[in-house]
Image (tube, rainbow, N blue to C red; front, side, top):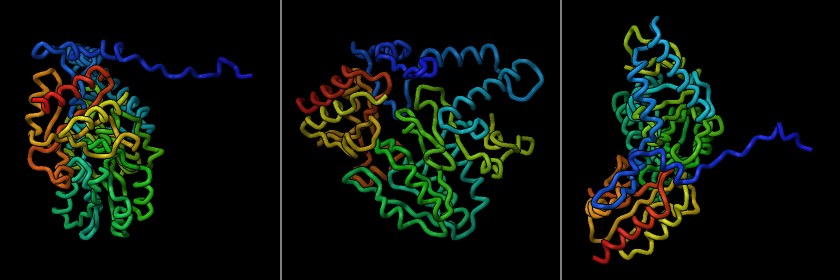
Length: 378
């Protein structure tokens, strides 16, 4: 018989009204309507606890690190606690967690450190599905060091990567694969474990952009086998800060560009300067509106709760503008996934993007669908 003291209680999932009670922004009203935020892929709203902790730090503990007075020691402790929290989040060691301004800045910083290990003619693999923060830093590095960039194509019909092409691109000259865990434009989730396995077979390192993935699922760096992973906390209800995971031995051995007095030990050497609920309802509702075209993998395939669509005869910016009048906030454009928009054959207006977050309700989804339908009705 099982000893009840050894049983772990199942994690509690808070009901949506309880979750929403923590977000002051959800009380906003626009044109007489409560605001429904579908702009989470570009940045989520912040719960009261985060704002309170930030204010408490700035008012009572604000200091630089590693000095011999209380507020500096308190800052060191706060950073150590944050590293340990993200280590739990990623299934890594706290010594493998570094912070920066955002994912883009961290990627640029890391690319320059890795570049010191590469030689002319070496190759980097990127994808057409990725945010350009995980493409352009590697292209810039390649241009400066005479490297070759190979690109995994997007299958526009499914919104997924061409994995057969990916396998063919890898060879003995491949030094790094840069792949997104999930597309910020289409919501497609990639098989990072498989991608890393193939890359490692040819001796390449793997860098994962998890910015759009971690708000919706746990990223297990040990299970995936990736060498580096980056994300931004403001995409999952945190402050505007970037987070980098790197295998300890790699972080420790890399020569990061840094100021001479800066720490040369991991992970501080990498630091410079100081729920997916009822998404099918959204997809099905939008698909029933005449003139709406949805892009990417449908529900049932690996994806985040992010719907990307266009409206025949109505510019994406105008769709967003009309929805905003109803208190429904959506994003439009290319979201720095410019290649995706180009491969889909869309112009400068790009896509309309509606992303569900932990606080999104079925009623808000219904308002979004009804708002889109009203555009057709005139």
